[in-house]
Image (tube, rainbow, N blue to C red; front, side, top):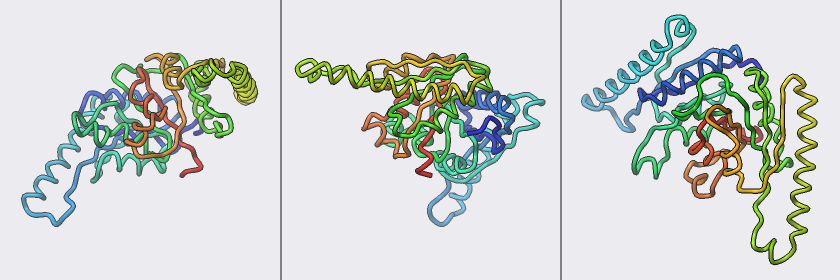
Length: 291
């Protein structure tokens, strides 16, 4: 992701307060990166031939989405609204946003959506989009700050997994927001095996991780000399460490691999957990080699 978002920011809206909050966040983020905003709402269509009754339901769903977009843009005020494009698309909302992620600089969703059994089985629109997108996705919870973040907190796993794109996103936002970037790396917690066998192995793994992170830190310090930065290496579960580091005033950037949302939930995916539980906005950056 470049400092300037020439491809624009796409925001999904559905008439709920969460999507309005996400739109406000997106407008301010786009302004920091000289990008334009596209507001999208999607409606379900019939799989089979349309009867007169079915066609009427689909038409009503489309009109409802048109109302969602119109009201969301109007709330921005005339000056901001003049530069925002609204679009209505047929299809599953998450699938539509995933398709937009092919060409947008950023897709933004509010945290909310399906409830009850739908949320348990299918996952919300925000979770599905964040798990399956082909580009960066920002998940904005109701508690998130909509203005520029106080800090950008970026989680880095194994340096061998090529964190270049994750760090570029984090530092580009730090530069645009004129705020510091904090690189966070979690080393697996001390286990019973470490206690019973040899703590030396665990200590060496921590020292190696610390050295690798220091090297990574120095490389990005040289690349972004105008951005204040810090590094922390901590023992603990990666999700727990990241969520304890980032507040609702921060932007949390995490990397991941595209996968079905249910798989991420079952396997304890760090980006999935962060997108569900973080108090501030989370940007999920998928491995570019999968696109």
